[in-house]
Length: 233
Image (cartoon, rainbow, N blue to C red):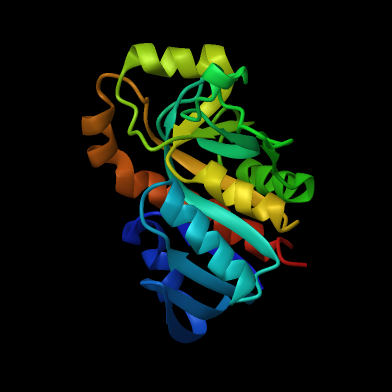
């Protein structure tokens, strides 16, 4: 069973609409839709915004829906040079940019008392996603890179540049690292697939509102191609 998580209703609405043999279940306030998505057994849900919502959702999909693979889809703010509005980022790994235990001697972003704070995405899923991007997007409009997450909507050029300098981030959002964290603890392969809605800079709030729906459509098209070409096999 493939578990697909979005943060906002708009990020999962088309997936739910296209699902066959659909049934709805409710867990902890989540509306989880199970069925076949483009021929693949899947559970799709909207987690809500932020790390706690995302982590809870990921664990429910694994523990109660028996998801053996997780994909997080949605929009993000571009961080690395060359990552532009309308591009797609395929995760190599994920980490928290707002976890700060430096007072205890840990580097910024490292989770205190844990051996792992950087969560690697499944390499096979990465390759499949990049193949989908090559089929659907022009060269230079897709990227393989690190995704950083925090409970912040980034709308500052200074903060955007800091995220790149400090973590080498390709893009930033608010859920992916929490889903990656839960997936790794459960030894479940995962992928984060993000379409860039804004530049995580001083104009990001307006750009996000204007381009969000287009970015979501781009992400859904990549996910559809990914599933059609073996993501769940």
